[in-house]
Length: 45
Image (cartoon, rainbow, N blue to C red; front, side, top):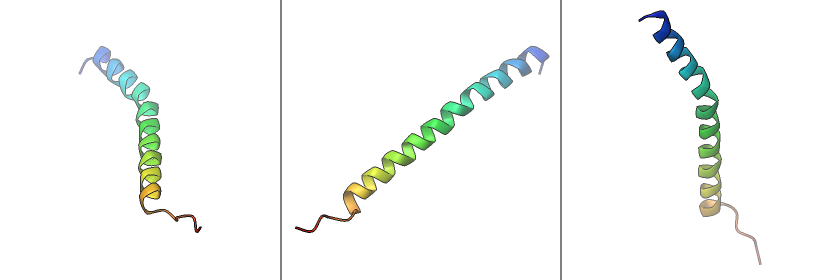
């Protein structure tokens, strides 16, 4: 790979990392909320 290609891949990789982590965090939170909505504790009336 040429130096220019290496630079482009490095920039793409490092700029995409925060978005991947953020998306993973949001997806995990949404799955947890859905599971808790379905199986969570019900209020006792």
